[in-house]
Length: 189
Image (cartoon, rainbow, N blue to C red; front, side):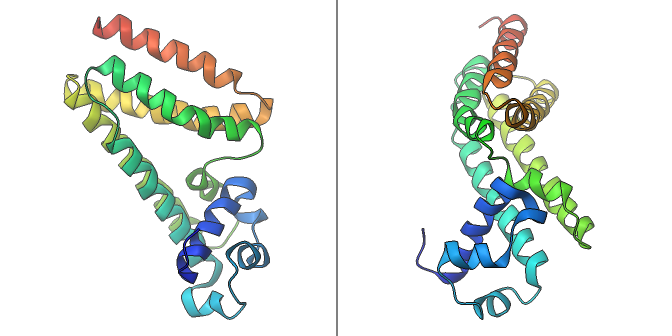
């Protein structure tokens, strides 16, 4: 964890969002996990919980987008396989009670729901755009790449929910096999 107090607080909030969502996270937990003093909350986040949550979800969104930018683009099938391999461990955490920090803000009960919804919409759109760019680079036409990227991000988010509910990674493995077969049949790699 970073030594910068503000960064540590954001990192602790990301983890809290992944495990408990907006409604379940508390300043006490963030302070404990970040090692920050109570006065750090409003010093670093004058907008309170809404600002801290929005910044944490934004940060998580940027981090995921950066990982997507590193996917190989040899062929559409290789890109999809690399995406599924990269997200499998994250979805595995969902089977054990984790989740997506960006998705967590879409079910917020705070008064700032529209701001948080926009943070999530922006993050998801950036993921789709980045994944579509990798798929286009791999040889898919832009429209097909955008459709497949949207399908894969939707698959990822749905897998978080189903795996968390089932307590197993099996729903992800099932849909991953189907996604790979779909790409194979359409791209003839």
